Amino acid sequence: MKRIFLLILAVVLFAAQAATAEQPKVTFATGAGAMAGTLNIADSKGFFTENHVTGKVNTYKNGKATFDAYLAGKDDFAVCSIIPIVLTDFDQAKHRIVGVLAYTDNQTKVLARKSAGVTKPSDLRGKTIATVRATTAHYYICKFLELNGVSCDDTTIVYLSKKELPHAIASGRVDAICQHGMPVEKAQKALGDDWVMFQDDTIMRKCVPMVTSTTMVTEHPAALKGVLRATLKADGFVKTNTAESIQILAKAKHYPFPAMSTTVRNEMDYDLSLRQSLLLMLEDVEKWAIENKLVARTTPRNYLDIIASAPLKEVAPAQVTLFQ
Image 1: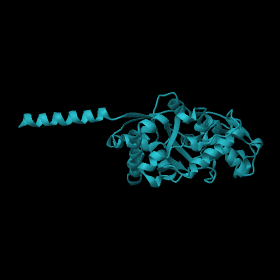
Image 2: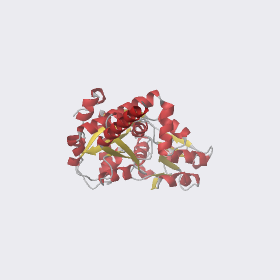
Image 3: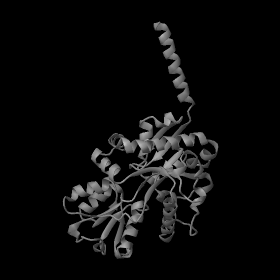
Image 4: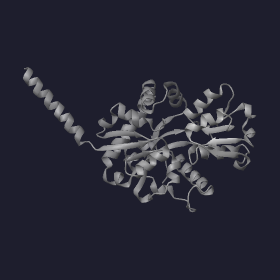
């Protein structure tokens, strides 16, 4: 009897290993933040395997590095903000946006020193503001100042790395910073009570599109749909198991649990979809990039050409409301 049991067990294990070996393997390039977090959850909870895909999530230091890694062929998918997509030259015929993993209206913030004489947005006139060049924060500070009656020419904008921002404002080198996440939290701690925060959720809907190759869309539709289904299941898991999801993301992204909890609970909308807001943001950032000479082209791209809505529409029709 024992011998029969062991034989059955060996057959089951062999079958499971064979099934796993046959699954297509895909890798994802993501940034260091939480916005692509449903991929980490899908990986951790086995949702990729359930949908006949072997997935691996690779984390890069920022959105540009993420998109560059994908374009270099290191990963099959890239999930990053729209800024690197707009600012990077690539062959549009070879790449497609197949969904947006998450949205946020209130992640990016402007943090200023009260001791610099800043108590309201208009006080930023004549001040020195630090941000990271050619990022969502760069776009945000330009729009934030404009909406509050302050021209960028009325301020001094300096470009630093994320790591430099907290010390720059705490030391008095700059009067304000524009960023999100850990740099803002570290700056607040360094400043004690000497800070004021500004945030306007009407400026932009930040989102993280999922980009893959046209080849993935046309030649590997089953694998792509498996990725989409796994991500949709992760969306639901975040909503019903929020505390566990935060633990998974804090570990995966090397974030303190309280900071990740604040981000997930108060800032993130994990909603794999293709909404009209994606196209509107792409077009607005494209205009900003051309006006500020952040790209060489002078004729705007047509981003409808690189959006492939059919795979997500087949998997979850209600998640596609983009007009094409």
